[in-house]
Length: 275
Image (tube, rainbow, N blue to C red; front, side, top):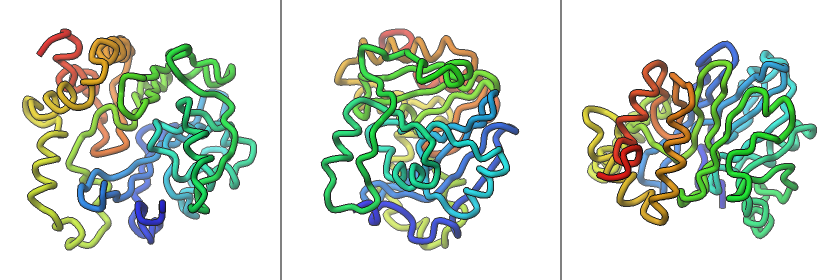
């Protein structure tokens, strides 16, 4: 049940922050398997047209709705960042019935098969990415004007990575973590940050961009890309060719400034084609 995966008090623990005048993040605590503190993050983007895209939506609290209203309120796209980032799509779709759901192919079927969770509906997807349209931004003209897309089918979770061109912001779900999740856990009690300390330190070490990021490079090379490393490498190279300076991951710290250099450090082996 999704209720076991999300905070019971989202309004009390969420951190809402403007990254640019057009890009707002909503950061929340989230522990994978109830143990690993990876955090969660939704990103709200106001397009040049005034339409709003929401990437990997998190809980739709009154405070989040108020921030959406400040951005104009015209929610037109709800983007599932991958096969795992979809729990709140139905809540947002009900609140903004004019929005198009978009995400990786197969997610609609996965959601429709869920029969015991009232939060997860079976709303149709207006656009789906797979290997046949992996770089298509043709959701509609407004979407195409502001976003570049890379569907990383070689990622285990089938990633949809976006570049918001006007503000040079790279937005991704699980392509790269940037732990520890400091902002995402900044409003929770201290005791909730201390449990399973050893396991979290080990996992954070494998998903940190600090220093030479050797642990992260190993994790990406040996774990994340092992299914089809050649295809994964090609996706990484295409993303690297984009013009971005900020990286917004769903898990861990947002990188404001210096994002391209950090990306190249984390994915050095993939960009070179060898470790």
